[in-house]
Length: 482
Ligand SMILES: *Cc1c(COP(=O)(O)O)cnc(C)c1O
Image (cartoon, rainbow, N blue to C red; front, side, top):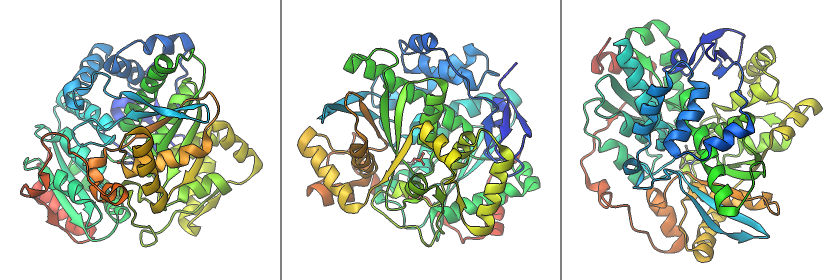
């Protein structure tokens, strides 16, 4: 019996993994989640941890994509996770010891050695393989419509460029990405890649995507799919590196299996930390999962008070960790669903309240206890702290970290426990956010080979108004149909 998926807002079944692969949203507006998160016996996890990254990915993903034959999944994971695509690192996501603070080992999990220098590549490279696999089996094609605040868009485009059955239409907020991020995306000249820039914020872009996706006949006619942060296959692919981190922490720090680690996660759309939560629910010994936000501290407020009050796009701060400049954390719904004991009816009421009043409250004792049980804790960072953390990490550990990773380290330091290694996720390389590095250190750093002058390459981007009908027309005129 393959694992079935359902919506967070009703008991409606959504089929198996391949049925939800090309979809983010459920028809009722909820998100696809597995009917049960598979609980893996400790001995099985221990045997997984002996494997290389691709083998581990195959084992983890076979829990969620059990409708794909293991031989096929094995081939797909080996193709996605080749050392050459990840800066030549055979571990794919190497764990590096930084140092000891107050008898706690602190380490950095490198997730940014892929083609676009941010952790989004970890999932997107896998998604590229999965999409091609399913589409060629069905003889169909897909037009991916997405919104990006920078890193998702480029990761999707690099994973899909040149693929024959896929086109990408990516909306990005005008003027809100770094010069390097813009260059990375807009310099792609592949015919199947379409960059559109929208005046407004990431949330405006995401609302446009949602509006197009809500028009089901249009969506079907134009084979629209998504790769944004609500795509479950991305969440599942990200679960893998939490296991890889644990295996490496065991070897690096001589842990026996079962000893906890904590993980600090620079968070925006809540996808990365949700993957960590799923890993924990599968049985991986994670103690604390630290949700680190920037000045857009909606999630921090929730974990501190139980109130969830997403901001409007106009009230969203533009910060020096821009990939976390998000006011509505789209994956948060999946976490709330789980801590409410998969009560879809209550969840649907909460989101109805959110729509009507702009907020909801989960400060009741029972829910607070479930949240405490879940291991998630939080903190917010800000510009001065970010700069100071980059400086301090450079001085103390001779390691330059990017602004998002710095937010993670800054907040992690409040949650250190004696003897429990703290793993900080490196969500981007510092070269990607050079302006802030120069501000912190007084000098820039060497770019990875081949990217030295990416800003001077010709760029291909089309400005478009914040208007659903115009976007639909663009899609209809510029992407192939089935
Ligand atoms: C996307 C991104 C984040 C936020 O991750 P979420 O999964 O959206 O919470 C953090 N840092 C960087 C560099 C990113 O690209």
